[in-house]
Image (cartoon, rainbow, N blue to C red; front, top):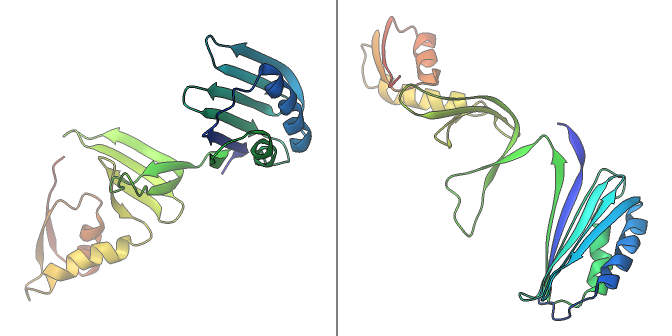
Length: 219
């Protein structure tokens, strides 16, 4: 894994006060001092009839404010490669901004990505932690194929964004398919596999001394 820093976003909700430009210009230096970062340049703009945006360029990256007075929201984000976590800004801003609730999102900036589980629901999101994408391509019949290295499951095969098989439990998965049909017949010399594109079932057949495999696959 390659890590380059930490990032935090803060959305203050239920803000009724329209803070002046000077408020933000002052508070950024409090945050910079607490986070031990160096401000190189500051750019800001006041919108009409309302709203304000500010970006502070840092030696260690940036932080910014953007306000939505009509919605009662002040949004802040802070990305740094420094030694102090950007979450130090939360304590300062919670004291300075009169608000009802704050939404905090904190994450590392690194080479690890999150892959949506297609069986997530609007109220319950699930992800696979991806260490590396090994291969992606579209098959001859139009299936989108991805081979990825997952943090928990090792190398894994996805087809059309759905997990098919993973290194961690592939042996159990393939052997279950194999045994469920193999034990139905005493004559197991010849086998037909319909599908089975990952090859696990074919391997199980060969490991159990199958003489002949007739393998049918879409592509």
